[in-house]
Every structure is written in structure tokens, then in C-alpha cells.
Length: 217
DNA sequence: CATGGGATTGACT
DNA sequence: GTCAATCCCATGC
Image (cartoon, rainbow, N blue to C red):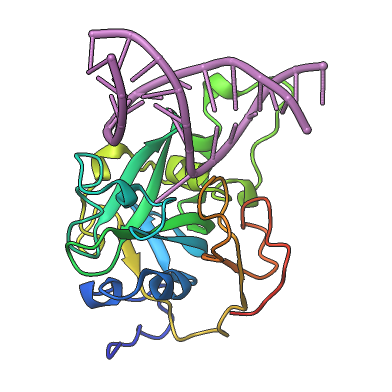
């Protein structure tokens, strides 16, 4: 990246298409520390997983279908799909057009618009007299939670992650590189042995289960 | 057209 | 630890 964030800037410039036009596991590792934002709500990526058409856990494994069109499209777009009938999950499409691959964004550290996130995660209808507002580390600590917190809907599918509405920005040069650990992907039944999950070590916003093995990446 | 299975979460035993 | 909610879509008849 030739352009450096201005001094004091909280976040960097949007990641270029070329960033995503690379092997998906590499991109998953390097998205750690970047930021996701939508309409004033933003967070730092602390957990990702890679998916590639060559392995059966990836939706693109089934080939080009109406569902996987975005996955096989140009890199740098959002692939948003509904999971378990309830949650919208956010992915960043990677590798050249024609190759089905994406990085699942699994957890964020809330950075901006936090009260808005809390309101989305704790609507009036869900409040009981005994319940307490969710802690910050419960707002985005899972792929379904973070899309709810940011207000990401299925209509964002196919959107350009450089132009928005969802924007992913580069990590700033300020601060140390986070220590990243790798592990097996979560919630899948096929190709479970691939260690394509990347997490910031000891970050409370990472989803459960936390990686057992602590191998530095 | 009917069926079944999720890249999850939260409530409950 | 178990389990249901609920929608999209892939698959098969």
C-alpha cells in the first residue's frame, strides 16, 4: 500500500481489488486487523475463515448456481447469504473471477457506532426485566452477531467492498501487528481438518470455541 | 413441486 | 450439555 493513513486517522483506505485477487487463505490471514464499516458502524476484524471451491465445505464446491454467482464473480465483492434461516453471513470474495472463493468474516472488535450496534443486538422486543445490555465483546463475537450489529442484510450481496455500502479498509501502520493464531474452521461437517481459521490471540471478541492449539501464523 | 440441510445463536435442562 | 427457530436453495422425483 503506497498511501499511508493520515496521522491520527483511525482507519486506512479501502482495500484495492488486487488485495482480494490472491489465494484465499493468504487474504484471510491478512484481513485480520482490517476494518469493516457500514453507515457509521465499524469494527476491526479479529477472526476470519477461508473457503475455496476445491474443498466441500465451500458453497462454490457445488459449482456455479444462482446461489454461488457472487462467489464466482470478481474479487472484492461482498458475498452475503442466509444461514440456518436466520442469520446473514458476510464474506469477501477472493481470487480471480471464475474461481469460487471467499473469506468469511467471523468476528469484529467494535470500533465505532457501538451504541447503535447494542440497540440492534438488544431490541426492545428481546428485553426482559432481568436481562442486561450486551457487553461490547458480545456485539460482534460471531458471524451472525456482527452482521446483526452492523445492520448487514442479504441485499448487500454482490456489493463492492471498496465503494460500499459495506467498506473494508486497510490496517493502519500504527500499533503492533496483532499476534494471529490458526485453527480448524467452525460449524462445518466437511473438510474439517483444514486449518483455515485465523484469530487474534487472546482477543475477547473472537467467537467460541476459541482455537485450542496456539500456533502462531 | 417436495424435501432436507445448513459457514448460527440463544434459551433451556 | 441439548435443541428449536426459520429461509434459501440444491437436489431429486
